[in-house]
Length: 264
Image (cartoon, rainbow, N blue to C red):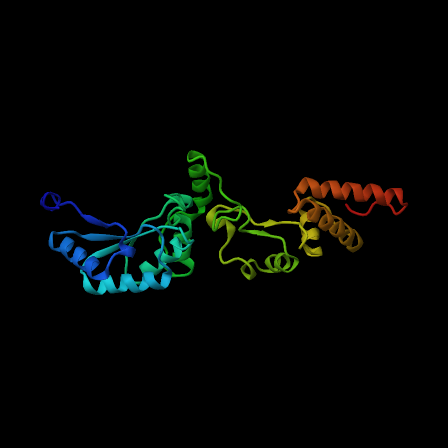
């Protein structure tokens, strides 16, 4: 420490496993570090045992008793790394450790993309990052680390802006803010209307408009029935090509029945 300060280095002292430390000892440790010239203390929830309420309390306590900048280092063992990082910031910490896609030991660390977007839209603190490249960055890191990005991954997962429920799809078509806090483009994604067992007629109509096909109300009802049936059998939403197979089969069936072609 003395050598570092003599050479004008900024010093951050690591408090390993701070979340399980005796508070009096933690205060003595932090004050001692400050006396020797430390600029920052890194508070580590090494085994991820804190919840946001305890995190806020302990960081507030530490902040009120030691004149040191605080850095948050949270683990995701109980799925609360991002929440604990935000709670620490709310309590006065001004630095936070993150990793792309939440990579890290065991269950991982707070995810960069989650913390950044939560800061921007929940805490109303814009971190000033190029968030529109988050999906691109996540894909790059996933590839480099031989990991996959789950489709349900917060912020950058492929399904975050995929709407299947009839009510949701209709609502997001009328106004995206009905079911989206921010636009998919803001994190490098695209909105998707997914046709599945929960879909409604509006989703079918909009989906086929994307294909350049105008459905009659009768066509829409029947294709929706067939699409729901297939989605239940496959236990997932349908791909565009599967919808087109349904449409072509339906057209062929109606022609054979002497009804004529219905769609454009």
